[in-house]
Length: 181
Image (cartoon, rainbow, N blue to C red; front, side, top):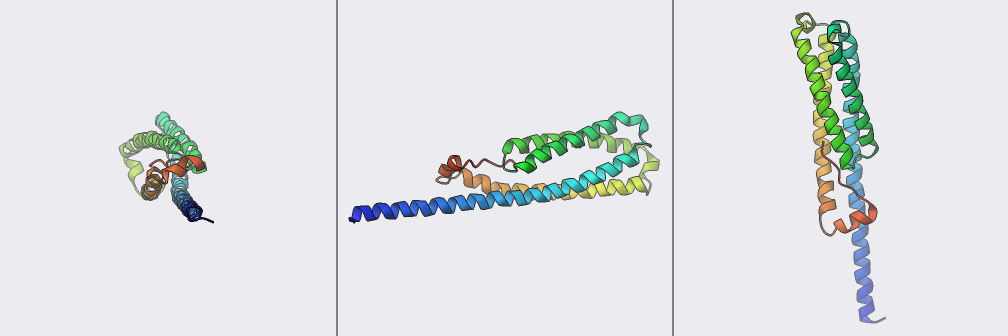
């Protein structure tokens, strides 16, 4: 073998090792995003359970405001559908955008229900409704922290797929940017 052939083989070996290392790094970062989504999903389940219990407790006292409760329930269902799509592929930015939009609609619907709840003095007293509101607030707080963790994990992944020369592998292996929550 000539020195030129050895040099080309060495260069090919270096490029192959770099490609394998870069691919493994991207897979590891993508797996971390899936792990972070699991925490978001757990917080969503807790919030959903709290919402179901709270809706059941509010059906009778807020019977005159059935439209607000129905809008809240519809927003919860839409957010759950968007979360399910995002859970299936947590590194698809379009799914993240859809989930964020559904969460914004849910926030608006929940704000209306809680504003109505604040107007009912008897419902603010310690009891079933007040404890369910507390559970909802705690679950919502857990969700905020889980979203922050997801975003902190997604940022290095997005940076890695946008950085040259790793960007060269992105199309070949179909890596997609993760969205932010």
